Every structure is written in C-alpha cells, then in structure tokens.
Image (cartoon, rainbow, N blue to C red):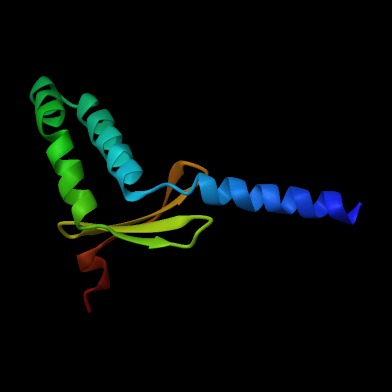
Length: 106
C-alpha cells in the first residue's frame, strides 16, 4: 500500500511540475484577456484590441516578474498604476490580487 501512495504522490508532483506554465504561456493568456475585454467594447476598441493586443501583452510580459516554485509559478505585473498578481498552476492562470498604486497612499 505504501508503494502505491508514493507512486500517486510522485505522479501528482510530476504533473504539477510538467504543467507549470512558462512566461510565454502567461503572455498568451494576457493576450487572450485583452482580446476578450476589447470584444466587450465598441467597434473601435475591438479593432484596437485586435491590432495592439499582441504588442500590449508583450510589453506586459516583458515587465512581469515570474517566480518559479517548480510546481507552480507566480507572476507580478505592473500596468500603469495597477499591480496584478497571478498564480500559474496546471497550465492555467488565476488572479490572486489586484491593487492600484494609490491604494497604498497615506
């Protein structure tokens, strides 16, 4: 019984490590978010989102700090006065915090 528990635990650890998303996956995810948000807006915003979404996601990714914890990663991005923090696990991204720089003002 102990051997099967070890195999299951090692399989889970291996799955988490193998599916830990890289920075380029985060960039693709951000591009999808930008495109989805732009599509909720008027025609001009949709067009701009389509044209510049890739550039914007590249800029965001280039200023993002990724902390790799082997089984998952965290991503810290600054968008002007907004700070976003995501966790990447099992090939997916989940937003864990969002703040504005003026939130910390005295």
